[in-house]
Image 1 (cartoon, each protein chain N blue to C red):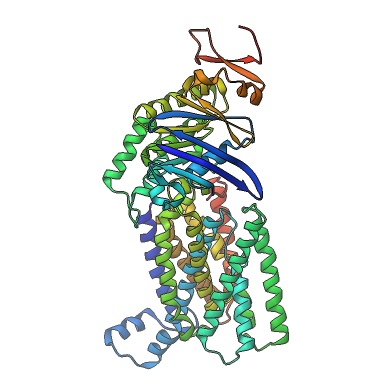
Image 2: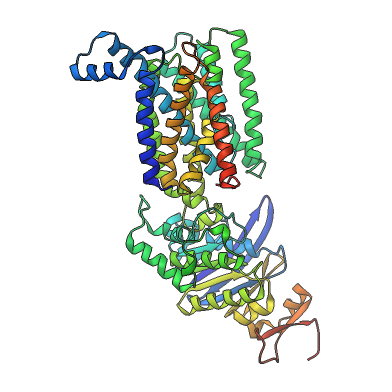
Length: 329
Length: 257
């Protein structure tokens, strides 16, 4: 599958999905109502309110989170040279979550920006801690995962402890743990648009350099890549993207691990293609999961984090078996 | 010309190399020889600019450690001994040789792609351009990496044991490929383990032993050197066999002709 057909397919599927997401489920809005609303151009009424204040927000939130987490996973995989790296596994999400809960405890009335800022600091802190540990012990490829798993459990314990002592630190506990978009607000979604856009631009600028990084540190340095700086930028960018996602939707795992590999299977190993395709794929995937999670047991909502695993894992295993390939970067 | 003056390199508190002073001409094929663990790899890494050193290494008067990465990579290319095998096609690999020549956006133009094709032609890898790197044999893989270095088009090419793991046929082929690049005016510096091969192909030899430059010279000057016998426990002599692939052979230390 080449870059163009992937992008076209992802765009069409995402558009269809977005319309489905608006129409289906407990909102009770039909396609006809949307068309007539656009036709009338009248910004009033219940339909308009539901679409503008609830549906678009939720769709945008899910899509942005998926795109951000998938890109963060891609960047972490290539910068650590490890196929298992992802913001959920090496402790970046947990670090961001811990700082978010911590900020909630310290400043209960703090603004939403505080939460986002704390998430970024936590994500950054966790990623540099993991890389620092891996570098200090010398061997980076396996150690980075082991250190990450240890850090994840440490941060999770921290989150649990804080929530035990301060149950009000997080508004919706289950949503925060499993990750979800049931309680996204305009104030938590829209400020993340420029952040994620900035992350996407940085990732796109990094992409030709990531292609060279694949050759290994010494060969890459031989053709003139500043390896340390490239890796540093990768981690910063991944932390930025993961933090934006965590501050919106809590601890969503899995997207960052699976989507980059699935997209790599489909479009190949050129990061100039992989960066945009991974973001489109991640956005589509998370939006699909969120929509299904809403519809499947409507009017009850299924946790999207659980849905992610139910849908993503079999698809990924199918890709593995069909391609008969090992995971490679 | 590369001028090396009194360089020393330490690693984790241990001194690996010290007091090396030598020169490499603009054009020539140089082999760095020496026993295992003597610091040969460290030596060429320092010239490649990816290992900190004390003292001075100057390329045409410019200090290597003072060069910006991209500028250095336009003058010196380096092929490490051990490297991962990414899942990319050969054309992509060779085009990475153009990396230091590209602007900030790193876009390959048609002219750049032409250089890639030419480099593939020069190294006899045109037929491999659409193959994936992991599918290639060891010999093919080594050739495409040298094609990448050719595309990088630097005056100095550093190679760390490029012939290792290759069968004899491919080793001979590789050495003639490097000889051809030397004839085009490159300065090629490689670490070599196979002494008859190094003596037969090189214009100049540098023997590194015990963390210092133990001897240097042309193959004929070097083969009688006592220090060679001290380092390896054997000697190298001109071979009498006219049909030999290599014009030098290993003999037992103190062996009689």
